[in-house]
Image (cartoon, rainbow, N blue to C red):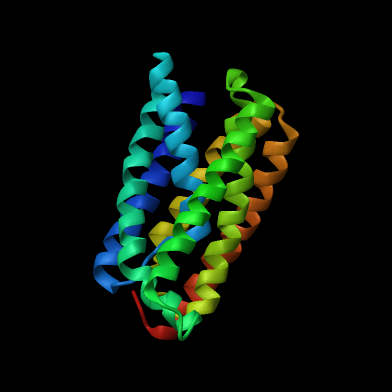
Length: 212
């Protein structure tokens, strides 16, 4: 059961990342909200590298490494297309401010992730679980905010939205219900609420735009 749910999570998030890359090429926009990307790339970078260094190679560790490499591609997409939206949101600013803000954001999230490691350690995976589910909750809200800000479904799809929901729901069952972790359960439950809201809003937006 646990391995099955781990596979569901891995496949769900791989679909999210694949859709982020595909839709970016199609719509010429960045497809993952910046703070979601900054948290993802630092979390997956820290834990995939530390686990490889320790010689621990299990299914989740392989999935983490795949996600990390996909994050690098999505970061390149953000750097390519994000500057245009940054300039629209901050008229009159110079181009270099976009890159500085991006770098500072990633550094900030790296510091937060390291703080979780120092607080909970790497044994027992509590630092990874708590950080992952808190950032997943922030990410769920960030996707809704991006949809509302753009007032269009550019860079988003129902496949991405459903993949994100199932990709978080599976580990919520594994780590929150089966392992009785109330922090994971609370964050995972709220993620599902926001993810379902996102799916509904995206469906309405696409239906209103006559997009398939």
